[in-house]
Image 1: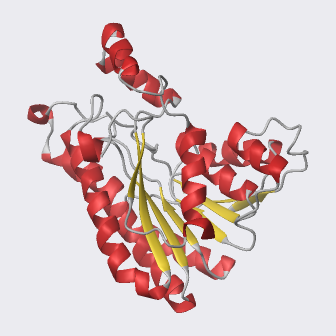
Image 2: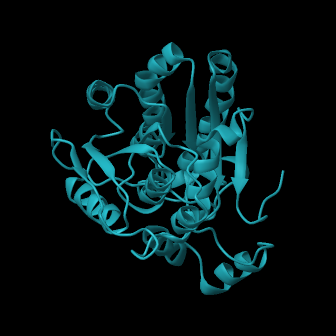
Image 3: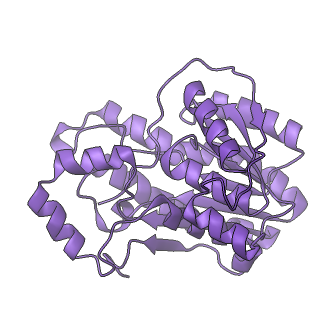
Length: 298
């Protein structure tokens, strides 16, 4: 059972990147709990760092982006939905943080290469890459019902999207001798899923394997590569899948099987990503970190 990260709605490519700076006081502007706490206690671990998050205009992605920005990073977000990007920038501004946005299709290798080359040119380099793009893309739950096209689409977005983004940004990290890559995996890739199908579970399992291999290769260059594996994260879209694919009795039974007696919230994952992106995690690499309240332990 796992959270499909960010199903992206297709839209025309080529929109110019935009920037909005917020003027509201972070202590009073309705900042999300994780971000607000760090403003209040002065946690600014990412000052001077530049981060890019893929498919981050909604849900889990925007929560992670706001958390990194709240900790002082210069943050770029991508998505292929320009309307969602505009809303993300507006919301960030209202909450007192600044984001930079770029329209990009994470499932298109040529678009990823072109757009991230532009980000590197404008930013001067990226220190932190969060490969958030992913999702089950509303493909069937049962193996027997999934087509080759269902498998291709889900693998392109979840696995190859991370490959293409990493390929574009890792050379600059190697040149600098510093970098953080955080891949968004899933409980589905380690223990199976109750709401997403086998194509999604297999893609997220591959992300965990990719994480370990990249960590071995890039560790000598001062780059850590880790994977965050959430359980069900209660975004609006996931709530819909949860209600569609499991009965009320089944949902209650699953909740009682979680030792913390609650589902994951976006702030839980944002805090984990911020930690792995920081120098507090400088000696942690190749890890697939379960964030599921103890529902599955290994």
